[in-house]
Image (tube, rainbow, N blue to C red; front, side):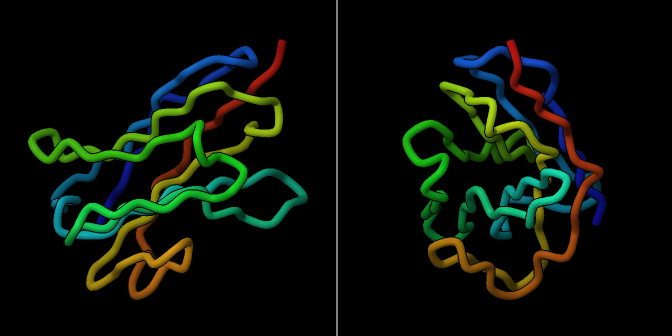
Length: 125
């Protein structure tokens, strides 16, 4: 499984980028998809997750109300809409997927072992 994240960049506080997670030879619609972020010197943070069975979504406290995860089945893409960006949102963002998985809260159960290369989001004036 090969995932690819895109949509990051250098952004100003308050910005609203949309990150994309796409996959080749893998249908994202049948699997739970998580977004995580990593900042040097900090632990990797689980940001959000969307289940495939009922579409339920979960968010970390740090992004709830500002970020939205969604799917476009036809495009085999999962989106992370980011609004009201803050400098502390600066990180490399990764999407994660795998088989036989689901998320409950921000607990990722099963296989989330497939990742992309990540996309850098830098929030700065």
